[in-house]
Image 1 (cartoon, rainbow, N blue to C red):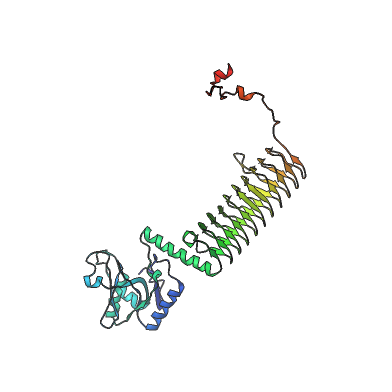
Image 2 (cartoon, rainbow, N blue to C red):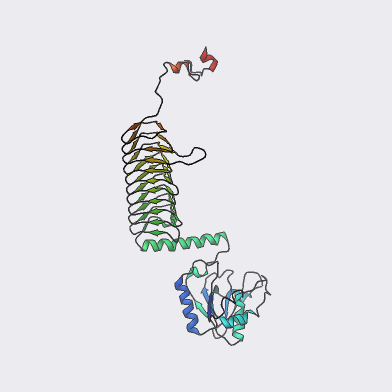
Length: 390
C-alpha cells in the first residue's frame, strides 16, 4: 500500500520477500513469464514440501485454481484438513497493479497475528472475476527465509555453496568447500587454489595461478598472478605477481608488495611500498616505509616510525642489506647498496654503499657468575643478595 504512488502507471509488479536472499534473476524471469502468459491478476509462487511446517498452505478449488492461502503459525489458524496440505506459499508474487490496489483497500488484520496478509487479496481478486494461478517451483532456495539466527546460518551456507560452485566451474580449485568462505563480490582467476580454512571477504581480487591458504584471511586485498599466501592475514593491501607471503604474516592497510617480493614468517607490514624482489624474511615490522628493489631485510629489523606524536617515514634504497635486529628510527634514509651492522639502532642517514653501525662496544665482566645475585651456591641453594655481597 505504501508503494501506490511509485507503481502509478505500471501494469504489473513482482513482490519479493525481503528475508529471502537467495532468489536469482532466472527465477524472477520465470515468474514474470508465467504471470504474463497466464493472463492472471495474481501469480503465487508455491512449493510442495514433505514437511510444510508453519508455512502458509495453498488451498485450491475443485477446478485446481488457487482459492486462498491459509496461515498456520498459531493454533486455530488452519483446520486439520488444511494442515495436511503440502503445497505452501513461498512468499513471492506477481500482480496486475490495478486489481491489486482495488483489493488491498478491502483487507483487514482480523487474525491471530494482528497482521495484514498480502495473500488475503486472492479471494477478493477471485470474487472480482480475476484468475489466480500458481508458479510451482522445485527450487529450495526460493522459500529459504531468515527469521532466526539458525535460519540465517542455513541460508549463508547455501549462499557459500553457490559462490564456491561458480568459482570452481570457472577453473578455481577449492580443496575443502566446507571450510572455505568466499564473499559474493570476490574475483578469482583460473588455476588458483584455495586451501582449507581460507576466508575471502569484501572486495578481494585474486589473479590466476595463485595459492591461498591454508588458514588465511583476505579482506579487501588484491593479489596479482602466481602469488602464494599461507597462514596469514591480509587487509586492504596489494601484492604483485610472483610474491610470497607467510606463514603468520600480517599485511595491514596500504601495504604494497612489488613483483617477486617476499614477506616471510612473523612479518608485519603497513602503509609501506615494498619494491620488486625485496625480501623481508622473518620477525620484522615495516611501517610507513619505502623499500627499494632487491633489498634484503635481516631478521628482527623494525622501522620505529612513531615518536609518540607523529608518524615518520623510513626510506631504504636499492640493494640494501640490513643486519639482524636493526632498528631504523624514522625519519631516516638508507642509501642504495648500503649495509647496517647487526643490532644497530640507526638514527642518522646511511650514505649509499656505506655500513651503518650504531651499538655500544661489548664488555665482558670476568667471574660474573660467581658474583651474580642469583648465582647458585655449591650446595645447590640460591644465595641471597646479602650473601652474594659477603
